Amino acid sequence: MNQNDNNIYGIGIESSCDDTGVALVQNGQQIIANPLYNQTELHSEYSGVVPELAGRTHLEKFPALFGEILKELEKRHIPLTKLSYVATTVRPGLVGSLLVGYYGARAIARAARVPLIPVHHLEAHLYAPMLEEKTIEWPALGLLLSGGNSALYHMKGPGDLTVIGDTLDDACGEALDKAASLLGLGYPGGPFMERAAAEFALQKTPQELEKLRRQNPLPKILKEQGSEKYRFSFSGIKTALYYYLQKEKSPEVGFLAWAFQERLFEIILRNTRHALENFGLKRLIAAGGVMANRELKKRLQELASQMGADFLSPSPALCTDNGAMVAAAGYLYHTHPEAPRQPDEVSPKNNFPRLEDLK
Ligand code: KG4
Image (tube, rainbow, N blue to C red; front, side, top):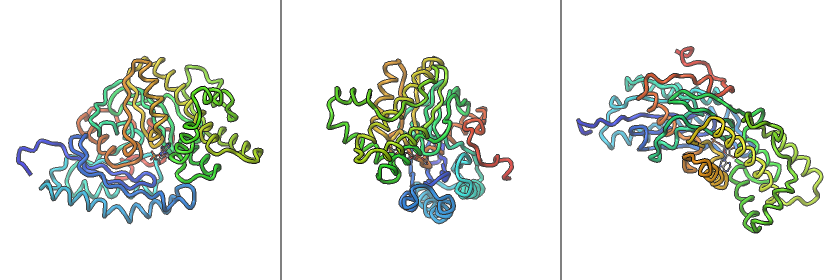
């Protein structure tokens, strides 16, 4: 290691659901290593994540992933004590899974004698664009769409986020996963729904699509919601698809995947537009697994540009869970010690004890 190395090195650990991620990040921006173990195949036979299996698998995979980080540090002659922080997701998530990451992180932080920074998983998703040379500026509107959460945030500063809209029931990704299962597509459903919908749309002219949009057999979501509310709801439309399939003798899978996505996109775009307008925000940050959907990303980008707002959204690999985004969040806390920590308020679905309680 060069003696004048003033870089800030941080480790980020993610284990809230079914991805085990350990990352080494420089200055909150440059990913040095971001190994990830994805458990999708393991859970696919159950069409959903089995918490007990997820926790055990994190435990099994964590040492090898951290081993990759150690090798990377060694290669660069960076001693563990040169780290500035270890950040780890502490909520929300599956308790058994979170505990693996938390105790792993605590052991590393103690060995390196550096602070352990607790990170809120959803907040970390919103900072993922930092890892692609984007600067986060505040205030901004944060849109988080993942397998477990769907929410809009007024982002006022590092650690200073207020939920302005949440889902009343299912999360957006969860709805896509369930719809894909009803349609006999694969798991996780989001990418399969995207592909089926895109293939269907490719065969139609813009005029035909416009007509089909007006004749969508699935209901518009929260159509009575006024422009001052930003709630989501994704469970009714899934039920509507279920009943549609019961009635329909020969359902057209591509059309239904497209029709389902259209309804989801409609409420996402409507709420985002109203929130940008009402809060007077000129920056939109969209993240979470569902933002890997190219069509959704394109439409949000168009919306932002119509409204004169900047649009930041990570590339697909960084939309889904990973350790690097946790390291990016940790960097912000490390460099803004005055930042408020209000992770409990970032998601109403908080199911992990406070860090203080774990000591
Ligand atoms: O953020 P994420 O990786 O983690 C969890 O919340 O666990 O999000 C996973 C979700 C899944 O529901 C998956 O179906 C969805 O993101 N997803 C997508 C796409 N890729 C993943 N949804 C739509 N289009 C995609 N291309």
